[in-house]
Amino acid sequence: MDFKIRTFENEADKDFFDKLNFESFKHDFIRGKDIPEEEARKKFREFEAADPLDPWGKDHLTYFASTLEGELAGLIWLAERKAFYKFKEQLVWIYNLHVIPKYRRRGLARKLLAKADEWAMEQGLNSIGCHTLDFNTQARSLYESLGYKLIATHNESCFYEKKIGVLHF
Image (cartoon, rainbow, N blue to C red; front, top):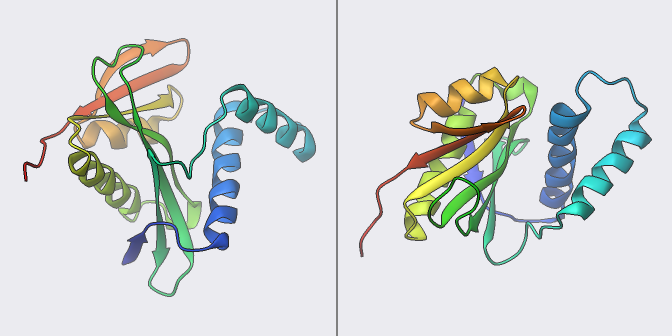
């Protein structure tokens, strides 16, 4: 299946972004807990308030994927970050990579990650980093198959980094 990958276009993109960001939070932090939706949303708001980010800010970029018919299928949220934790240089950080279930296993996540590579090179950065949880073996396998190296673990967290070439103009 072919997909179109693009940057932000309209308010429907923001709604889709918010929906997938919440779904990713539930997958990672509410997993296996039987709690009401409103309680999950409250926990998500607390999580967001603890580390407020502006996904529409100048150092952030989100790519949206849609079918050729226009149905939104996934996204990747990227940002430039200074060196932190085990990352030794400024890098592009993947805050969220999410493909809705009916479009998984069709190469879409790989296409979105390729956009991360392109954007990092355009920014003149040599490295892309991300975080996933150890139980998310599909994400870990995907990252590793694309050259991401596990550089640190902490509790359930797995931190990955990929070194990339830099375009010279």
